[in-house]
Length: 117
Image 1 (cartoon, rainbow, N blue to C red):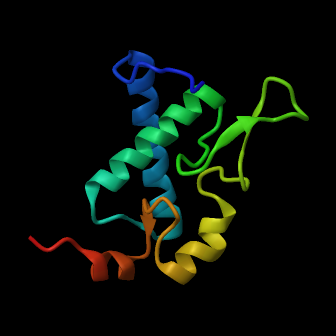
Image 2 (cartoon, one colour):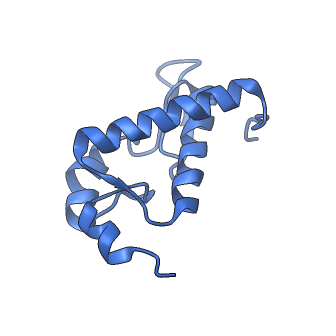
């Protein structure tokens, strides 16, 4: 059963703010831009904050998190997906223009996929 979390709790809202600052820092550090669809960014940031509270790390919200059998009480992400994951930095963003979750994108990807109003 998936652990429950009150997403309106002060604890979650505080972690959500910290996670937004974290993703801003990742964008600045690597020259990324956020996905042009705000819903994508909001969902990923919420998922990262949730995982940080529940599992102690900002595991990618698009991949399963499971108990680490080698370290009781600890968790691991399937395919070693801790944000920003090596797969995103080394493969997905350079080759596809965005990470699997879609939050971190190249400026070119954002320009090509900007939502036209």
